[in-house]
Length: 397
Image (spheres, rainbow, N blue to C red):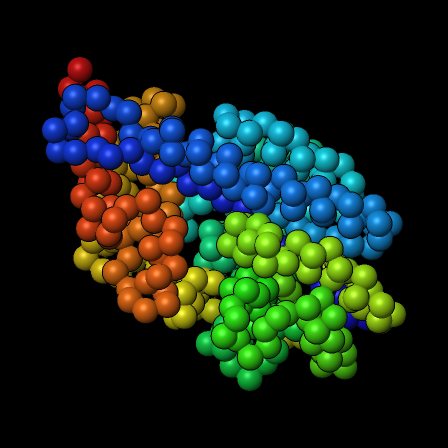
């Protein structure tokens, strides 16, 4: 029986205020609370609240046969509490159905797996505690920031009790193999790997409202037919995407909510298909092969590597400077300074510094609050310099 595994990323970064050279040492307010609140309210009303209500209705309508998974970053949950408590309550209502799995990730949606294993493990543990506190679930499935994965990620999280990891199903990872099966990591036979079917996922996440797409308009019936065509050629169709796909990236007036409302019934109409959670996939199916991933891959941009966040001079310099503060900040044992530093590790800050062109460049510009990558870099570096001076002041006092 082939299963559809729906997973959604929920993340909101803490965007930074305009911080000039003359603000250094003058004040230490780094976050733009007005902008963060405005964006959170907008996305909550366009996406989170209506989408969560629809998901809840679908779970009830299909009597538990419809199942979904979320990974919600710590920075998003903090902002739900601050700006939209009703959004957090709506996720808790989904948790209470027993049909929703909440995954773990890095608390600050960071690149720490690449730059600091110590910080990476600290953030994963902090996120696990948050999910247990808010939703009453102890996760056994891990999803790193933006599906960034290599063998080392699996090796790092397995001792923490995780037995399943999500990753991108890129050809560079799979070669001739299909993403529509369960795999195991090369680090342990116990560690299972769920690989995103990026074509089917991106048909919803990116191409749904593209009138120039040959398959436009995408209907629930058409999409379910594509799913059903995998019968005999797959056991697990992993549809992974940003939750903001529904209502924010793909607007309601384009029919995205109508599509989602009709989709489960169309898929379940085929008796051999059902929905499953990531934690269920590892016991329902057997791994068909071992996947060796020595390089880092992600679900971002055409390259599906790390170039969305690092690789140009701006990004590399910013990353080097902020991670250089880890040892001195942790030595101070100051929780407030530590949280400030960790918030600056959020991957979005470096995403805004990307200098790519064409379609990928347009996506980066869409998400960025800055006029260009150079402004993002200068603003970030001013803040890092102020933070470094604060640390040095604490060291000498």
